[in-house]
Length: 579
Ligand code: DGT
Ligand code: CA
Ligand code: CA
Ligand code: ZN
Picture 1 (spheres, protein in one colour):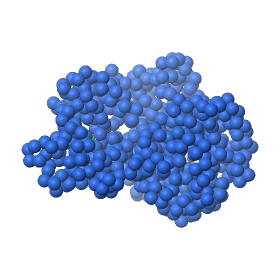
Picture 2: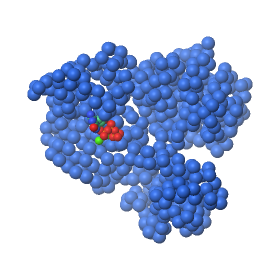
Picture 3: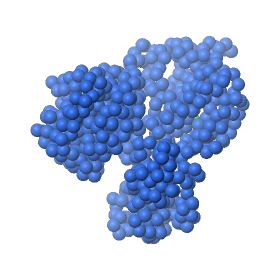
Picture 4: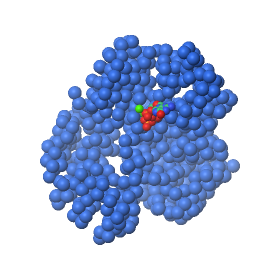
């Protein structure tokens, strides 16, 4: 049985279809398919669920999806593709699925690139860009050529890596099913997944069981498994439908701890721990810690670390960047715990580009165990999202007041906004209005190409404003899509400390901004953090723990994260940053 295509897979097909129609010179259809792709990608539930709920009619009801595309969606759900796509795929001479994911390239460009330069695939595109041929095409210019080269570089770097937030649900599902197999003891996914790295190359599942064959027989039949590469007596290696590889190893209980230690890594951390073992006259491998032939530790990770003279080290810290020294001298930080965020500090609603009303988002936040949230819709310079001006912000404030009355003590909605930092570092909302908000967050959404000095100055000017409380996504990067803008983050952190501004740790899977190394700097400097999900839809609150992981990888404790506090303390601490 094949498993159902994900929304991302479906969106990719629709978006490629848009390019096919563009190449064929068909009118209107390209835009319609692009719109449908966007709709599917940002949909709040899976297309499969929509279909299960209300059939073809419900698919048709997805905004941006008409009856024609709804029929294709149904076909994709059952066959993984659709006839018209296969037909076009044969007819169009260009490898659209290779070119389309390059950031900075769209359907029209792909067509022109083929017509002018016979560019058929990624290799052709890169060669043409490197040879300076693209900038000579009318309306393209040096800037697009540069963007295309950057896009290709980025694609290469991120090739084969998957956002943790996108594979976590699949891994958790599979783990749960493995645990239900009779005779199975422990199930843990090791590797970069267990270290909560931003991206994961492949999935390393460790299982203890009496009967390895039974576990592997069940695993290869999981609907997620698309292809089995190879299988040994205790190990099997597969490709999942999502495109990521996974291997599963079945272990004996007394080697579980050492295997876990070995396969959690990272590589540099393992090299260091093995050196320590050698110094002590031991040998450390995935099978255990040995003194000569004698096994002296292996059942648990704790005993392995203990025999090496180290405290147990949280996986997130295992990167050979000071954790071993700290573990030797009882100096490991007391890391902030998963699930300890009590309020979300960045939430968008249908007032701008969010999918749901303030009330719906509040209810979703409550069902995720949160006690409060800050509504932070975009402000006016972001016209594409219908950014709010002072008048609309005031109206929104009234709605929030009414909702707070309705919700009573159960939950608090705080008034905020994600205010644009304009090119010169001023804000696009007046101080008079800022004063009326509970929390003022600012961020950069334009002019990404400034020099480091200009960008740093621009941001510092913005956070100098005594009414500003939080800097959102401080570097602007999108993992696998967009490099951070050039900014001297240490200068920004020092300014944040001086002017009493908290730094956001944005937990959205492709943002994770601030990143771990910068968080570590912030923690050292005593700059306070807030972890938030940047929710645009109810299910996004689930991302909060990705932000917590980020803080943990930056050696942060509970006291570094303001929104681990109850709402009144949170507000007091946030305002208290201003001396
Ligand atoms: P990934 O999959 O690229 O996101 O990163 P990891 O860290 O999961 O790496 P992976 O899957 O190649 O290997 C899993 C673990 O096995 C890794 O975290 C540490 C360990 N390991 C892999 N290769 C080596 C090695 O050459 N030496 C040592 N000491 N350990 C290794
Ligand atoms: Ca791995
Ligand atoms: Ca691996
Ligand atoms: Zn933003």
